[in-house]
Every structure is written in C-alpha cells, then in structure tokens.
Length: 78
Image: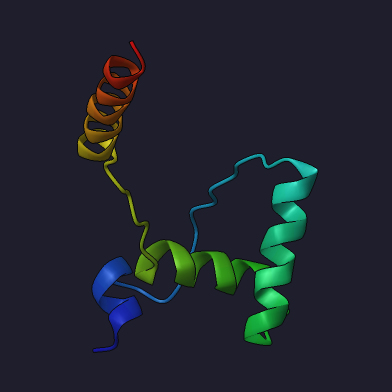
C-alpha cells in the first residue's frame, strides 16, 4: 500500500480544503512550484502539506545574551 493509501485509506479525494493567501504569498507559491517543475497546484500543496516541514527557531537565549551585553556596554560608558 502506498503512502497516499495509508493516509486517506482510499484514492478518491472527496474533501476540499480552502484557504486564503495574499497576492505576494500566491506568487511565492507559484515561484516554488516552478522551481520544482510542476504546474499542478493541488498536487503541490497536498505534497508540501503532508511531507513538508517548518523550522521554528527559538531566539530567547540569544536575546537574553544580547540584553546582558547591552547592560555591560552601558555600564562601561558611565
């Protein structure tokens, strides 16, 4: 059984999902599609939604270090 069958349990896709994007976002999506060499928007969005990933970076430690460095810099000026 291929991956699509495992996810949906069937080949027929009867459920429709809609969402809105800004014009710049739409242009960016089409640009990425061209880079992959595909013209099928539904297939591209389905593939990227199922197999894609998002990288989330936590900068809280870095921000704390920068804040401490700013305090040191301010103290050395006084």
